[in-house]
Length: 361
Image (cartoon, rainbow, N blue to C red; front, top):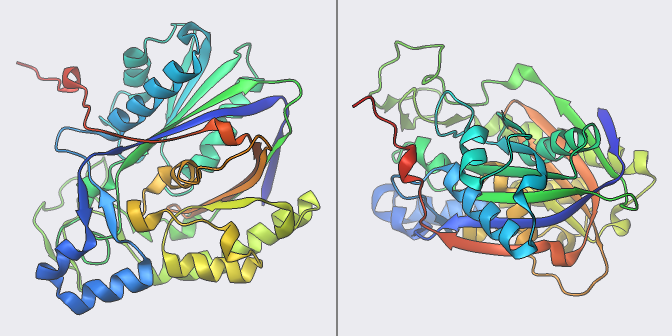
């Protein structure tokens, strides 16, 4: 595993946003049958998800989170020197959605703005990218925005995925702080598994694929090549072997153990998967909170969403291990201290960027 250590950077605030519309898992019983839905709820743990409106994108959700975070914390926008947006559901193929968010947030021209194309592991990767940009520049503030609206690329006839994913966005403010505790991280990639979670068409490969839905022999689910496919068996095997192994190695590298942490904020992939990871990593279940019962698998946002869902009290910083894993295949962990007051909560919004609807007319 590759390890990094950033000194002099503090996680000053995290704000999350979800769409107002809620879809309960029970609503799928008419399509898939009561037994299939009840089995899914029992194994995966999703009771309901928030679903973006037709014109609402991942950047809309991240924008709403950022607007509230910056306003509530009283941050002067011209002081933000870096903006990183992590998503796998951008507004456009080009340009980078970070540039759109830069405009909407009214940031200075003296600002780095870029996209990172990652999903399940994207928050921990994004924290490292953003903090490294901050320490390597003359900026004092960096805004890490994340968001995904995977409900828009999942077939409603694919029972392996349509009940799983929810939509959300999050904003994290990183600041330079000479007395901040180090932020340590580790990362791994196995590109041999790139087909395990994939949308085969819609970019610049497989451009001639049919948009029609059909039954895929590999799993019997109905989807098109422009919708998400996930090989559940491969993802399960990867997660329960590689993730707890990495967590144990990382804790050993840091001279720490499960008892040294207040919280293990995990990517919310699947309730059963998380229980197996906790068991193999020897993490007490009460230190691994679950948010996917009310929000589903929210991809890149699942870690900050889980943290903001905690509502911790007190002034003592929490030692948190954040662990993201999945698409790529990629996985990583971050060890950080977070002030409970930095976890600003979760808002609901239907806001959408009307000027983003670009037409040649």
